[in-house]
Length: 114
Image (tube, rainbow, N blue to C red; front, side, top):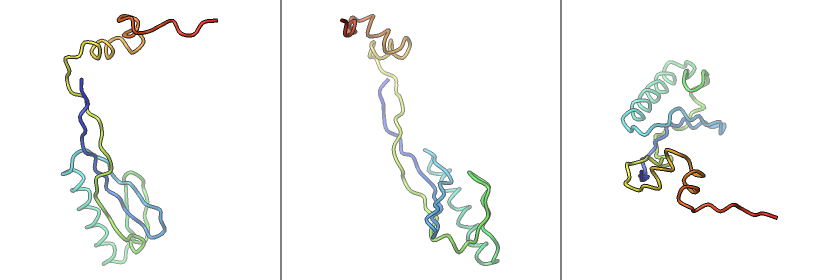
């Protein structure tokens, strides 16, 4: 199997006290965007109604919505996703493990001996 990169998105609440919260990490942009929309709507409502901003995931907390200076959705990194490969060494390694593959194909020596 070959590795291909897949984009990961993060939804963050950035607070004025530098206590930022990672709310979601996902490779699905639409899911991340829906969480972002929900959080920004909640923030707007909390500010308007002068109520605490309440968060239930990934932690349960409530705080002054004035502490938030930004809610952002941005790419955070890329993950490696395996794709089928015709490489017999790689298939054997996935099935039998690294050491057994080295032993089978004679790529593994006995190591340092006194």
